Amino acid sequence: MIPDSRPAARPDSPFTNGSVITVSALNQAVAQLLERNIPLTWISGEISNFTRAASGHWYFTLKDSAAQVKAVMFRGRAQYADFAPREGDKVEVRALVSLYTPRGDYQINVEAIRRAGVGNLYEAFLQLKAKLAGEGLFDSASKRTIPVFVRRIGIVTSLQAAALRDILTTLHRRAPHVEIILYPTPVQGEGAAEKIAQAIATASAREECDVLLVCRGGGSIEDLWSFNAEVVARTIAHCSMPVISGVGHETDFTIADFAADVRAPTPTAAAELAATARADWMAHLRQQQIHLQRGFQRQLATRTQTLDWTARRLLSPRSAIAGKRLQLQNCTQRLRYASHIPFQQAQSQLAQLRIKLTAKRPDTGKVRLHLNDTQRRLTEAMLRLVGQQKLGVTSLQTQLELLNPQRTLERGYVILSDQAGKLIGSAKEIEANSVLHLRTASDYAELAISSVKILPEALN
Picture 1: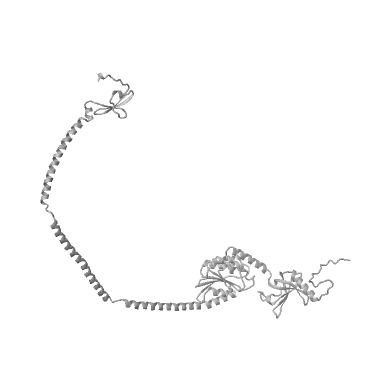
Picture 2 (picture 1 turned 45 degrees about the vertical axis):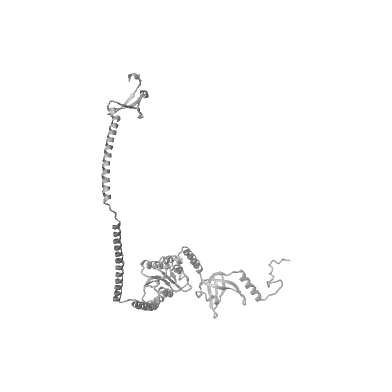
């Protein structure tokens, strides 16, 4: 007997040994098998047999050169698609493989759809966004504010763009006083990115606008791709004036939106952000006028009340002068009394002191005569004493002159001393091979002693 090599059925599976199942059960099992084992994935192909049902569901065939598969996209998902597929369109769908059980048809349930190649473009978009963000090109700290009062607005867009008409209409309606300068450039197609960057650079170099609008209408990601170029983003970031980006519709985001100082959801919204409506300015001015008038009225009322209060306190100049005159007369009298009375008192005290001094003054006549006599006698005594002292000094001077060594030397005597200045008083003090100093009455001499011979005293 040949063994059965087929895998065993799971306990909960309807495919048990010997069991019989219905077609519905079979299709449901196959559908579950497909949905469990094939995850949600992106599939590329060409649209064929496209049908939009009255319910809003889309039915079509997705094919390539070798195979095809039926597809369905229900209304809940189809309403979020940014384009309506047509026959022959190359698309990419994000789908779940399933089985339509009533007919047993194998099909895919589409969750999202995009044009072929959009996935690569979106990947490139994310990579460039991450690169520029890493360089700080999108930092909010570097974003500039839009001027409150704009006199001139620059627009970078195509002359044929419907967005230009919307912008001009909006600006004319909201701010007819604002001057508009157009920097025309292609907004899609080959080389459009470089031309857009050149137009922005021209506006930046001229510096003739207060704010610059970079705009275009909606479209597919391919149509908007020029605004995802790195050169456009860097030119916007280095523009000399604030830049408002209004590219596509509300759901469209480009690299230019992140590089700009302000992103507007549509070109019309960009125009509204660029210039405050004239009516708003006029209303604001009227409101400010009302506030200013009320402020002036309040100030005038306050100053008037202050003037009245001050006027009530202010006296006439004549009354003020009369009051000051009275004060001056009073001060004069007080000053006169304060200075005259003490002076009289002082004079009276001085007269009394003079009388007392005269009564107590002693008689100095006799004392003066006695003092003169005493002075005369003292002078005579001093003269006698000085004479006596002079005689004594003369006698002592004579004696001193006799004892003067110089006079002794003049009589022929000499003085001997050694080198240390010690006097030689005896011949025994003289040593051989010594030097002695000899002093006479008029000069000095040095004596070199080679030998010494002491003579007997009888020879003296």
